[in-house]
Length: 292
Image 1 (spheres, rainbow, N blue to C red):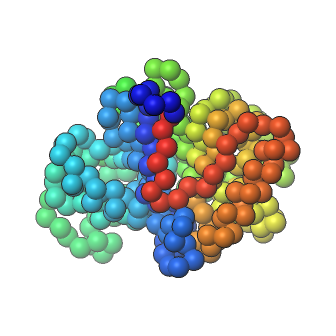
Image 2: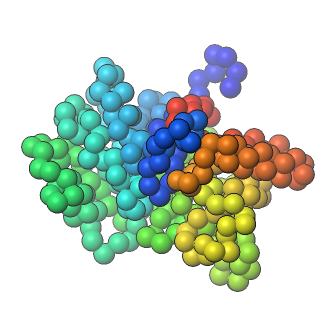
């Protein structure tokens, strides 16, 4: 972004791994914490996408900040790797700011009941006041959720547990799309999936930054049909087809070491070159900061 130009959004990755935490020497470069992405709008509104273990470090940084703006946590879905860090989010414990939590899936249990169970014994010991400033909202059937100048839209992902693809817009239109758990299944040419992919491509049309599930290699897909995840090359194909400006490979497999992640990036970039596309590709790492 040119110097002196105010960004529409600032993005920072606090957790990039999928399924379960995988800290250790093999994951130092790209990180072992599970999904959490901080998004700051031009009005400094704070959006937090998912509450995986990466939210713990984000919470610690927010505690050092002087402002007390409301933190809006939006869950893509309720699977454990996306909510494991919520009970360790420091602003909840210290009650330093209001925290709003929203999720739009259609699970039978209400979101409030789910959060109460997550923050209570036997899942978590009783901590006085931990929920006193947590406001829980079901998305219900609203077409978009407004947070200051930002609008967050949902699109149904192909993933067990009714996960969503999230797209964040401002007054200029789409800016960021977040699809941490999404099975593109390009090998399946059924009418249903072809139609779903067409709608998804339209939903993501010309988005400047696409953060997408890249859990698998193409060779691993046949043995994981229905598991709800994509390969890095499938994510690249989608990004090219929808005209995204940048693809950020995300939700790295817990067994994928840093060198293997870098090889996936190289393969995706080769695919982009072969397609004659201007798409930029990188893999998310903890601490990566981007501007739109």
